[in-house]
Image (cartoon, rainbow, N blue to C red; front, side, top):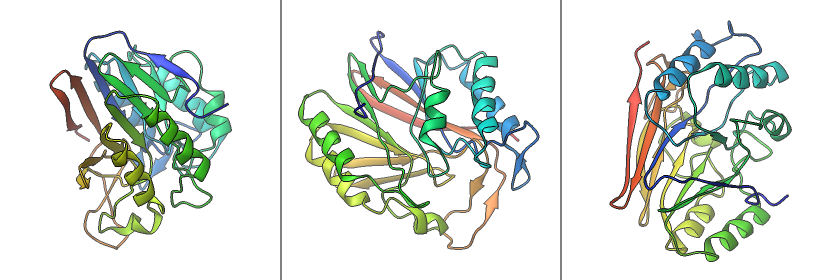
Length: 257
């Protein structure tokens, strides 16, 4: 199946999305990532999202930390048990297994990668490479370019890896062909913004005319502007995206520990 073959159609005149990412769940609710109970943080984010009046949620990858089938089952279980009543979509992170993600993609959790609304299109990209660093395969970039050439409406894009350096430790695992992806997006003259995860903190950058936003993790955040491996429990966070006829507005919301 082609990556963008499965389509989801939103019916609202305006669009309210949330971007959440890097849950790093374990096979049990007691699992801790750098002393943070990732399931508890994820539950608190789902609870907050349930009150945001959302049309959809995009999960930005790195669902699992221990790479167990039970961690994927726990993700699906926590979503099902939450008060969140909108569809949840996903892009794969470097920790994730596409087969296991597909197995939990039923009902509320959707495998669709091409989302349509009255205001434009949302494209969910695959930046998962053979190493922890990101890599967009040539055939994926070709399919993306075809998708962008097939329309004229504005586009919002999501991926997992950061395509631009952040002056931090995770630059060793950034999207290695990020400039190629970014140029493809900008050259289409359709893309309004690219939003990603992976870096475990909030960032706002730009490439040519394209805004590039990073969303903090639901789990733990990584220290900014240092090449040292430092983690900080700043609490979980998520990004809201409000798309109206006036354009895109986005903001990060932090939850207390």
